[in-house]
Image (cartoon, rainbow, N blue to C red; front, side, top):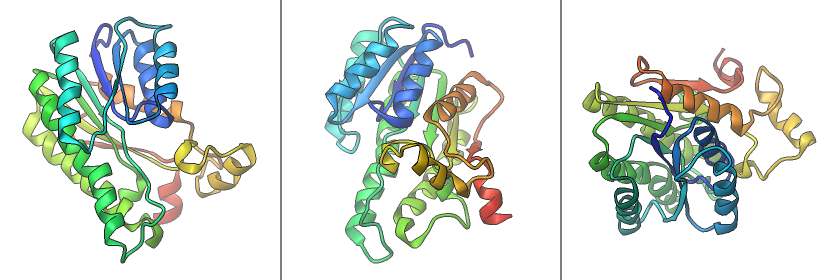
Length: 246
């Protein structure tokens, strides 16, 4: 897939993996729709960076758990571009209250990490005749990964991977659906760790360091460019799964 002049929506694009992904697509010549929930300053910084590489980039403020706001995203995309070529479902959270018995945390993670992806995809498909969808999962969604402190997070990332594979069956060959499963990535979800903290957190990987957001972004771009990958979960975990399951 030639990405020049393609229209790409990245949800949760004001920081972390979403930020790096938006910029990576801009470098490919895409018009990038930068969705953000609340951090206008960071979203504007991403827009400014994207504008160095491509034209037509815009920001759209919207909570992807709110159906009316999601509808608003796609109204703006339709009005400006008429269509959408690529969707990256990246927006998500980690609930610090996640535990086996905290039902509110389960509901929160479900709405933000799973149902939001289904909701955004529903309306994206109205503007996609062909193209690519990439869902951002996690190595925690794999059998044997995660912990009791991330039980809801792990469960709904696993659900997202199942959704990805079954959606791929429905939409191929016009729209190809894949997901990416990162290990520990140096993002705000980990508190923007400094070099020393990254070294410590990265010990769970065979590469003995944390993964950088740009490395995940490169992998997402790969999934979009490649027309032969369909229904796959690309693991980019620095060898973490080999330590956990090997």
